[in-house]
Length: 336
Image (cartoon, rainbow, N blue to C red; front, side):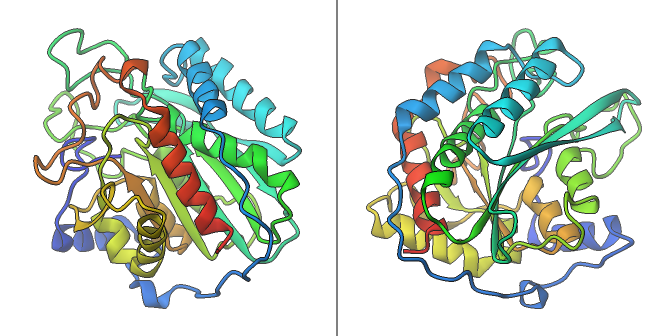
């Protein structure tokens, strides 16, 4: 995900609107009021207890493979791990695979991993995170051409969703839940990269592919929640701009829940710049109102200092952050 920095992704409102109109010849930008607006049925089942220790184990397991850069053994092994783990929970699981060409003319086998809870349910919620890591630490001052662990940028969101996936089968929840782990999110062209001709839509290739080739014909979810960098120490989650633009009602719902749960100092009522992250393409191409919970410093106007550096390792992970985000997402999904 990116601001004009995380992967060159922050845009102002006018720039994003122009970008969306230009980049989608098949579907123009639509205001959030034009999307389908069905409200998930309220349930009376209790919200399961999120286990932060379990989520931390899932995070550590991903990092143990090494950087999950497309085309590497670590990437292949982690894909199998995620698929087998989701399948072991009793969810209907599949891998969506396709050969993808990146901005530097390299070809990789994209692997989106999808797990469905209650696939027969008409009312659905989409939960997603990216599981790949960037091939270079381009924001670092050393070893810039080498990959990094991606403990927060990638593994944290996946870890939270794995724990939620583990809890779903025994929960009694009537709403269908789709867990989507998207690939090739972090293999994009930075704004200042002059080695190759400037291209658009080079980030979030997995979510772009899924949005154009959804795992079920006519798939639709009432809303979606993207998790990106949700395990770091001292997190701050402002109201990300693309989320505000496309899904302000979903954003307000989640932030109100978080604040009622006592997390107001983390889920703050401040707008942040718009970003190009996986939720942009879910909104634009799949027409599913989707928000992004992402760590962003609104004072410094940047992502955490370890972003896209070798500092993004297990040392900056706080399981209390995983716990908080997991609990907020569960509370939202169970609609209490």
